[in-house]
Amino acid sequence: MTPPLHFSTLAVHAGRRPTPEDPDLSPPIRRATTFLQHPAVHELTDAGDWETPLVYSRYGAPNAADAEEVLAALEGAERAVLFASGMAAIHAMLMHVFPDGRGRIALARQIYGGTTALLSKALTSLGFEVSLFDVRDTADLTAALDEGAGLVHVEGISNPAVAVADLPRLADQAHRAGALLSVDSTFATPVVQRPLEHGADLVVHSATKALAGHSDVTAGVVLGSAARMESVAGYRKLTGAILDPAAAWLLRRSLSTLGLRVAAQCRAASALAQALKERAEVTRVHYPGLADDPGHGLASRVLEGGLYGSMLAFELAAGDEGTRAFVSRLQLAVDAPSLGGVETLVSIPHLMSHTGLSEAERLGVGFGPGCIRVACGIEHPEDLVADFVGALGAG
Image 1: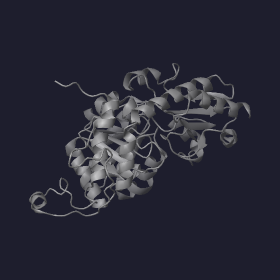
Image 2: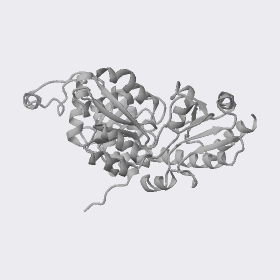
Image 3: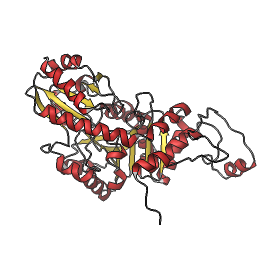
Image 4: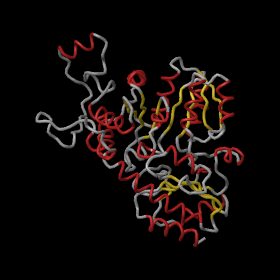
């Protein structure tokens, strides 16, 4: 029996392989929006199968299918469905779980502000209801489930304070209450965590981030069982949110180096977190790789291979007033509101991803005054440390 392939090998070899009839080592970008219909296609579509054959690019397209096959292999999912953005992917996932457009969602407080906004500003008017809970509090989730939540939605590693969710416990609680568990795994990537292995039913990523990894693609993906993804793909067909062929080609190209990039980013994050922890100008560092981080023990159990993620956050003693001045002094890290690229990015959560929250609400999410979020790139860790330490010292 052939042993299972390692992650780095799957990233290169999963999915399409060149053949004498299709010899390109790198697949061509196939921009066609419509395809020849012939008896073999008619046989399938007459039977109601509009996904297997090539019919029309809104239904499915070769470059998206190539990337989906690799993503499913890396995540350990039966199928992946690509979308034009991460938010489109989350929306489709929610509509799969609640096809009539109404239902109650138990939503972790420790989550990306855009997800909260999607539910509070767009979907509650359709009939969705939200019960917020603290991802660290078993009783808090129990209360949300008792209110009738049919879905528990969390981030495996949260934005921005990198709290690690106890996915096995959350899955058990959700399933015992008859609910599903969905996990936004954007911060972790399948290099650091594969939520389906911990009991999750659905996984979503903003593939814009580390999966594409070069700050040049906007994409999203939902992953899970073949049966669930058939429903998700059907919703994508109706709404037209499939990923463009050129973007899908770039994503597939980038997946080959995902393991290398994320491992380098995790090493950089670990070195930077250790250095920042020693600085008097910093009151707190959020990073589960630190031995004294509250989530370190849990992270060591549910994250992969001694990697603790490429994201960290820290709080300046100078408070909110010092954040923009500090960011302006950085020479390598770039002030930009994303993550997962080859370059290190910084952002100020209370001015970007979590704007408008009160101080109490920010503390509930997990971060205090003066918070800076760091998305480490693949620069040498010593250079990054020098950049941040220099910016702190120059203040």
